[in-house]
Length: 272
Length: 244
Image (cartoon, rainbow over all chains, first blue to last red; front, side, top):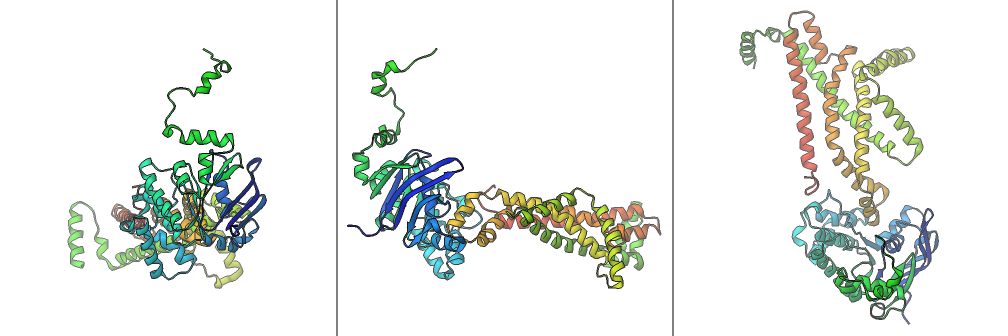
């Protein structure tokens, strides 16, 4: 029997005004696991991550990370304590454009954690080497490619020595050639045992690195299981069709209609 | 130095411009005094207006209604009325009221009134420039800061303000150049700035054109210096790869 999960979501509900985005999310992440959340756009994937780091507050349900009951945090100080434990990497990198790459990595550890500057500097340089950007320490974010900026953003999150890192569609803004270099960094982290929760559209990658995969649609978890089970033998029809579209034919546009379109031709009408 | 001045005055005389008053100690002393007064006016009101601007911008972008509304009202009233009229109101009305209640203990000199009025007036313009900068900082950048456990205060001072100032800088420098020229209103309440000094000299002589040229050149140079300083700050704060 596995130990107590590091992250536990139970029946989490969240609505923006009248628009329900999460409608009862249950999710467990154990320490050292890599968990992917997949699903169509607008299904609430990113919202789950934002709830985890307290950027959004659910109206109902419980979120626990370690000993912290996230949904009950009151006041800035408690949120800050949580965010020291939880790293977050954004789709749009969101580096600080007025600071050099090195300063981007130093600012939080020195100003927020009060770490010694020289020590933080050594760690930051080591992290930049780790994401293969040691030679860019003095550059500014605006001078880097998207893939490089995203790797800096990952290093910036790691500089806080978080217990877990949340990745929010971190490759969605990148061109295909740069996706690989970012995924390589994340793969390394998961191999080292960093707890990672990823929202991703990179199905092959999710299949390869995830211990658990959650498939969401319309604010609900449709199904979850091991990567092998979800990708190899999904239970739900909806998961199956989504994965077919996501993985299908290497992402190419089908050159002819799927077979069942022919079979059901009578159901389509043609107006001229 | 004085020999050089002699040569210069001689050369200009050939062009039909009579700058001989520069060689008299009375007139030249008065002008020099005026030039210094203008410099001090500029310096104090630049500092004052920037302070007022930051405070007003903070108030007007604050989430607190009771801060937001008075600041907004102040900005609208201030920038929609002429500086000269404001100065007259301040000096002729407020100053008189203070005089009546405090008598000789009134700490406000005419010089101080000019600095105060210009600081408040230009501060309103700075506040709008800074507001544009503050609102141009992407929300996601602040989200990134808060996800790195920055407090509200740290977000403001480490991320929001540094970026806002960079975005607002060209508009701020623009305001400051305007401020330099605006200090000429001091002459309206007999503060001995360079404009007032010139008027005093030309009412006693026949050198209006010469003095006009002189003070235009002086204001031009002063504005240019502010412009250069602004450009230098812009260059220093430039974010490589961002914009140009």
